[in-house]
Image: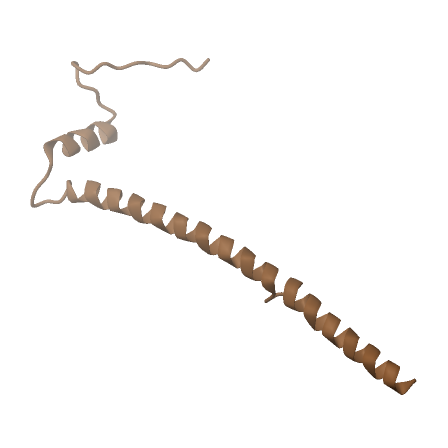
Length: 95
């Protein structure tokens, strides 16, 4: 009877560790979820790097040593809420 009990306890331990190896905090399912999260965050990082590069390029056009006239004109119009008489302005209704 003690032999059967030892085999039963050993089988229960093996089953417990086997289930945890698959579904536990550091198991196979968790690893797959972490891999998916790594891919998503890597894609987001690449997108944010591109966004930052575009912003840096726009800021570089406003540097004091070489100001791009078009960029300066765009920013001044935006800040002053100004439109040139030759510009085509389309008003949108609130409806």
